[in-house]
Length: 101
Image (tube, rainbow, N blue to C red):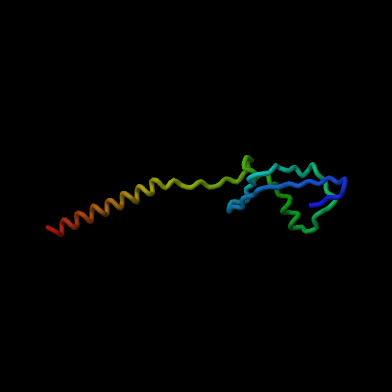
């Protein structure tokens, strides 16, 4: 990156996790674009529209942040599978005993 002598240059960096629920900004400082004015404009309407979306809702501490769906607790499901397996074993054992008589 180079700049002209005497010119002010700013650089902003973010670390973003791209997820199904939407992007999540992991690190970086929120930027208030209303405090800055540029001599340049973006000509492409689609890009300009996307840039209007506030990134604040993707910040981890934002009240609007996209929440990650918590994994369901599978303990009950596993316990049920184990109980069913034990039941089948008992039934097989009884069947074997009945056949041996």
